[in-house]
Length: 295
Image (cartoon, rainbow, N blue to C red):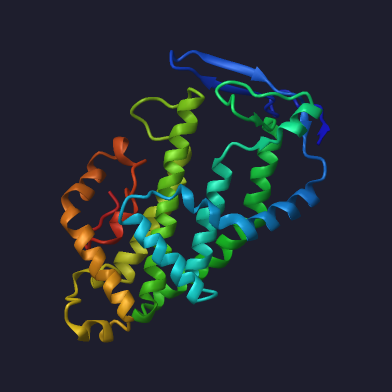
């Protein structure tokens, strides 16, 4: 860490938040930034490779999302180099950028930094450091993985090979669930800082909503990906026709039992977008029904 001279009107040097009475508070932070960016980048990448999966604790525990993620992680372990592996890394690492970066107490004391409300249980890094850390993760990890995954996903969707269905479905479910998490985080962030107007979706979410609709359009309109959810999986010939293992066939039967009876409720979320876009399965449930539309 080293001191820096902020550029007025460009560099953020304070934290703002809104309390329960909707009063805005602001506290200036010390002018510190990360000095050794290259070394910090190496340390972060090392941390990601060894510890990214621990962010699975942030998964929704409710079925069936947790069950599908369990299958995705199992599939990724057994099938190295699949798209699901990259999608899971994107999910886990994206959750890292949503957390408040903080400093160990011993280090905070050295730099005369202390907790501020509403983060009284930890000492936040400065706004400049927070930006630097997020940019390292985005530039050095998320962008390269995304650039590797999306062309491969598009290629498989356009090819239309039924053998790729399991990899494609799990990949899309993970990516769409990540967008759900991003929406929830954006909503929480803007409420904390008092910049979210009631009855509006955060402006920064528009590109992610577009991405979600593009993924769903490819899955439904080009790949016809929801078809297996309408098959009779009690018939043993179905698994053979779909090139599915016994475990995979049981997995789809489970989803049929869990998802299809909830069709009316799940589709109803689309009609209450302003109230439900932060809810679990807002985007991911749209993989299951063949009458999907982007409206």
